[in-house]
Amino acid sequence: MHSPVQPGSMIAGLGTAVPDRILTNFDLEKMVETSDQWIRERSGIERRHILGADENNSDLAAAAAKRALDEAGLKPEDVECIVLATITQEHPFPATACLVQAKLGATHAAAFDLSAACSGFLYALQLGDSLIRSAAYRNVLVIGSEALSRVTDWQNRSTCVLFGDGAGAAVLVPSDGKRGILSTYAKSDGRLAELLWIPAGGTARPASRETVDQRLHFIQMEGREVFKHAVRTMTDAVKKAVKLARLEFTDIDWLIPHQANIRIIEAIAERVHIPRERIVVNLQEYGNTSSASIPLAMDEARRDGRIQPGHKCLLVAFGGGFTWASSVVVL
Ligand code: UT7
Image 1 (tube, helix red, strand yellow):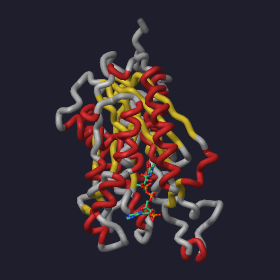
Image 2 (cartoon, rainbow, N blue to C red):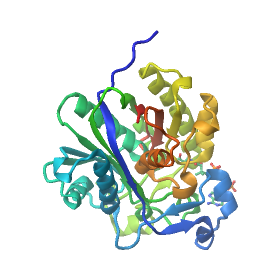
Image 3 (cartoon, rainbow, N blue to C red):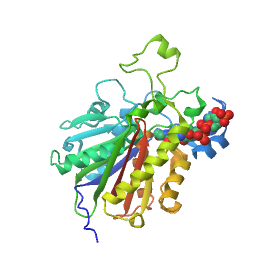
Image 4 (cartoon, rainbow, N blue to C red):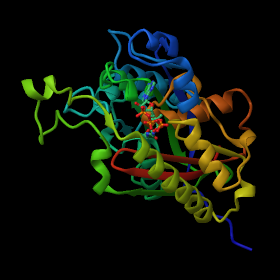
């Protein structure tokens, strides 16, 4: 018999935000050579929410954060640290987290961005948990927020059908002993960076006429390779998180995976024998929202009553870098 893991931090509030504007597969049929049937069969996606011209990443992040803070019973000025996981920063610098801080009025917080692509929310959760455990801060606002529509190549059918915009936020505070983060796990493999990336716009290839003409400021992905690595590494990651939490898969109430492709999710679930009815899937509505996908799915399942207080949620993600990460959380 294993002794139970003592959680250091817990999620005291969750909140999400997505843009109102919806782009359906049928809309995409008018933009590129694709079909609703292909997109649904290959990915499971039916719609995605897309930012309006006058909205941006920090608006979504601040809206999600406000909801999470309200639920946690905290005021913006109570926030001590903001970790914003994003790969769609509004500017090379300053950090988008600082723009979110200003929009919230979180005047007493330290704020910075974290870049781990689709694994970003779980990387930020691991960091936030450690910051609470070490008593560096009494609360940490962890956000995953993306404006992927701004870096999507709307002329490339193999990527433009996949992504959407959205944000999710969680307020971490010291655990009350019942709720909490039971385990966190994160890994990377930078040798595979070029399989999923935006080639230009950084210091390696600053913006130039050529980089614009060659469409190098948009997401590029080797879909099939990414698919294979995603299944292998996320299968390994869920095993690691369950083991670190000193649990068995039968103890897990909900698998909440990164929402990139229904076939990836089913392949992982099959390998660890988690039945379909215990998996939270909402990619049909939002597409792949990168660092926002896990909090979006978690919040939805909590609000509709699937996740009940005390349920054990197994979170897992994979993204560019490559990065992958997992966590067991009692909500
Ligand atoms: O969030 C970060 C992690 N990202 C992921 O996890 C994504 C991982 N990859 C995937 O989800 C899948 O690889 C995709 C959904 C991107 C693609 O599915 P696939 O089954 O791997 O398709 P494929 O790339 O092998 O393409 C199959 C065919 C190709 O045609 P040919 O070469 O067989 O003639 C593509 O050109 O489908 C074609 N194709 C399309 N056809 C219609 C590619 N995109 C489209 C499209 N509509 N949108």
